[in-house]
Length: 291
Image (cartoon, rainbow, N blue to C red; front, side):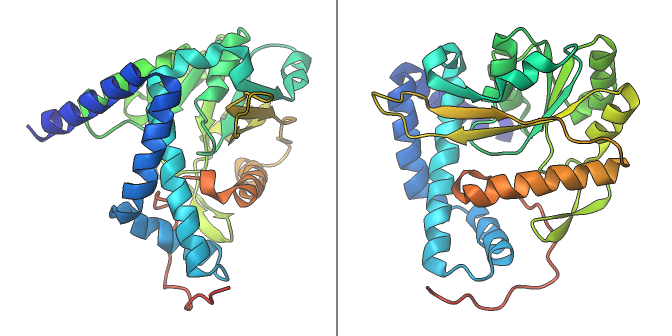
């Protein structure tokens, strides 16, 4: 009963966003996120994370980031209802396309973080003819999860969650000379603790292990939200980076990935998913100093 009640709200909101169209839905969602999000319980996690990662940041600056975080991710949620609209070339700026063109085949693992609108990454790959398996975190509500899978399949060829033996599906995709897309900035389960933003964090190393096993490139991809204008109408920028070196072990490869993602997050902290409990902090940081 609880799941059905939750889903009824999700269904109504998603249908409203679809009815409004892309621009109006994104604007409305951003307004609601900015004004409601900071009062939700998950905001405490965001404050704790920001206090530890940016200990010298004052409370006013933190609250500004939190407001922008909620605005951004509310927009992302509404934009899932309009993924097909982003096949329009003018809405996504692509950098580093030559990286794709230089690869000998389409067997690769692309990784990113919960930044910008990461769903645009497999969408671009699909548009360029890359068969993509996307790994995702399954929603707790099975009805919501079914709809989210439907949205995601508009932007990739296959989706797989941890509960569906995702590792096996990754292996099968690579054996078929296909690619995999995975977000590696969150914790999906057991794994070694690797430094991330200055603190040890349990880290998924499977993608790096598979890159070594199948001798395929491990390619970083960054997503950024832009401010579209009539002269520059792109909503997002997607940047492909050269593959990481896979000479070391899986943990060493993931250290490289973390260092790169750390820079992305520091460049634009308001577009990262701070409400996720990424770290286990031993104690609270000292009181912040207002600046």
